[in-house]
Amino acid sequence: MQDQDYEGPLVRAFNALPDLITAATFLCAWIAPGLIGYARVRDLMLLMLIEFIVMHSGAFTAVVFGMQDVSRIKRALSLAGLTAFYLMFVLGFSLAFGSAWPIWAFLWLFVSRFLQLFTSRAQMEAKMQRMLGNWIVSGMAYLAGAFATVFLPFPKFGITPQVIADMHLPGSGLWVEKPWTVLAFGTFYFGVLAWAKLKPIMLLGMKSPGT
Image (cartoon, rainbow, N blue to C red; front, top):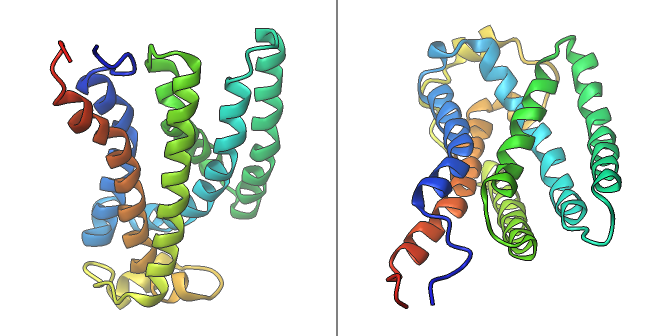
């Protein structure tokens, strides 16, 4: 019997597209930062902190989506309350940096993470299993990427000393002193997220309709 959770390669590719775009943006900033502007490169560094908030919310949001014993209104209110809670942290970033960009970044990452809940025709239980599986993958990838920025000697590529000076990075720390490491982190991390959503294409796509 054909896997009922199989949505086809186009749907899975569509779900992975936001993560692919984000990974490609990090890679572009790493190799040729002038193409997207030094201010945007600095914003990408903040994006990894915002993603930690979105990732943290992933499991809780999936549980809210999966609540079957409550009305849609209560579920919607629960989701709105949960989103508002995490959005407060993002508003703190927005006020600190004097820009609305962190809010838009949060919404982009939020949609990227939960897009598959709206495109999949699978039963809610299967959706929750997939969401929790992706959440585990993202947590492992985030930890692996964070440790890698500390211990692995990533190449600088286009992040020259002059570029670093033009970025006017505030504060101190590894990411400020070696900003190419966080760009490598973002390239790896969002690439893994996209791979996790695309991988079922290879696993399920090889099954014949009659099996």
